[in-house]
Length: 268
Image 1: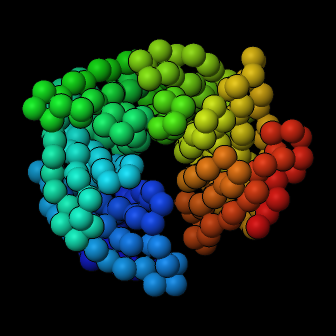
Image 2: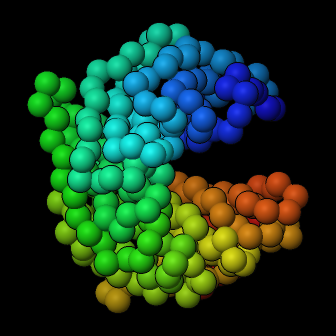
């Protein structure tokens, strides 16, 4: 089932459990959606935040983070009442001059992000809204970054469309692992525990990288169903989703439980 967030343009989205959030790529609006019934998606509250456009959104429990695309602002929203989201904190992250195109929750009140033209990652601690703390860390990766974080393991995975290398950082933004994905440019990453799912926009391959062993184990495979230019992935530890950026829009789901051990992924 499709549902329109009523933005009149493109959006960036994230989901946690029964709730999804959409941010307007061309404006300040943030919309919540109840996705508990896939056959009946229900639009919930909408609010406008103090930014010009939503470059990235992330959701964790009853909190949503929104990053501005062209300016270094991050907003934190309380969505305990899905019909009435409210702002509880805002950081002007001057250490990143180019805004945010990736966001993820590292912990309940800690958000990590990366900008569209910057090779560093930024951590923002919203624990005390009256005194927000920010920290930056260069990654050594070229150009634009894409990242994800796991709020259980408190780890961050980072890649770049301009290179094959994927790096793992701890909660203090210290690099603790690096692996060659064997893919020609990283368009999207997703992290579950210490395992990363990585896709390229230049072919239909994906890679699973197990940072729990030394050296990290890299397993590559091909997304089926004639996907053209895999650009977006999501991973929860067993199942992976692969979205196509070009050609006919399509989505493929796989059971990846055996892929780390050499088995072919099971297309669902």
